[in-house]
Image (cartoon, rainbow, N blue to C red; front, top):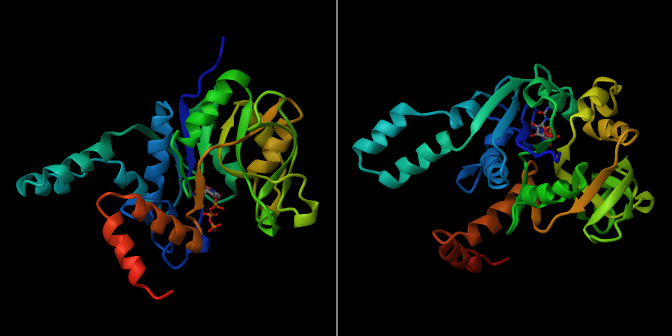
Length: 291
Ligand code: UTP
């Protein structure tokens, strides 16, 4: 019987050092892109892709994430008294958007370790992983595109984008073979972490969306700590390749690294320009800047 992806996991226990000092006391995942916290974009993407349960891996100093998706009585009462019906509806929608379970990662010991923390909540079924600081603008949500592929392959799938030039060496890169039927799909031979540009085995860089089979948990349990003394998800996926096929999928859409200051600035400009309520005025403002 074909398996379905019902659960989406959000690792959100990292320290967010690239965004200091903003992330000293505020979770990176709560930084606002225009007017919405980063993690809410990801949760909306997962729901649009048909996921029924959201699992968020949090840590110390991450209480704002739970508060954000919780009911805020005082705020709702105030908005009601003031007759701000649109804002009230928006606030209520956030607290009712999904079934969310939380699990703690007590120490930021790496992405693979964060995924492992959710083992009991995920159970024995395939699941999605969304890195909340990778924001993807797409007509069909990136995760939905991947789930459609999973429904055929029933194998783990890593989202990739084509990166030309030397910046390929900031990514995990696929060593892979093309699929005969689908030009966006490749079969993964292995992964190479941050290769020198001339040694990159392909232009397919791994982006923060994954669909993983539950075997990843057994593999991660038996994976040694890697770079930076952390349990790396990419090492786990390499281990998974010894047992199963893993695919890479070049999604349609644009990805922004909003966990990085420049990436966040680019996303802010582009998302603002696309907004009906902000775009026209913002465009006029940008034109006045003598760049
Ligand atoms: P990043 O490497 O982008 O996040 O991990 P980071 O470590 O918080 O940030 P920098 O690099 O220091 O600026 C991607 C996602 O994985 C989570 C992070 O919260 C982020 O959403 N993560 C990372 C964990 O949950 N646990 C970890 O141990 C590491």
